[in-house]
Length: 71
Image 1 (cartoon, rainbow, N blue to C red):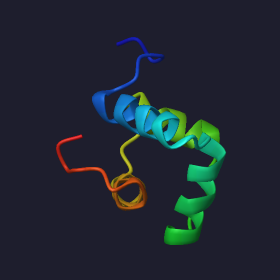
Image 2 (image 1 turned 135 degrees about the vertical axis):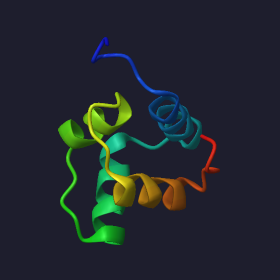
Image 3 (image 1 turned 90 degrees about the vertical axis):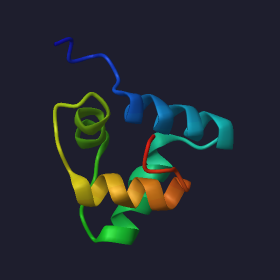
């Protein structure tokens, strides 16, 4: 598996951030505020490429960006 390729979820998140004019750093801060977990760009990158499974973080992203479950 190519570790640089975004999953459908990762692509959806990146697209939504662009649509809103927000940077990933903003999302990292919001996730930390919502979950109490420290999140950095490396960790998010692993989630977006499918190298890491983090249901709590994924759910926080869905809530923050109001993404449907199928994304």
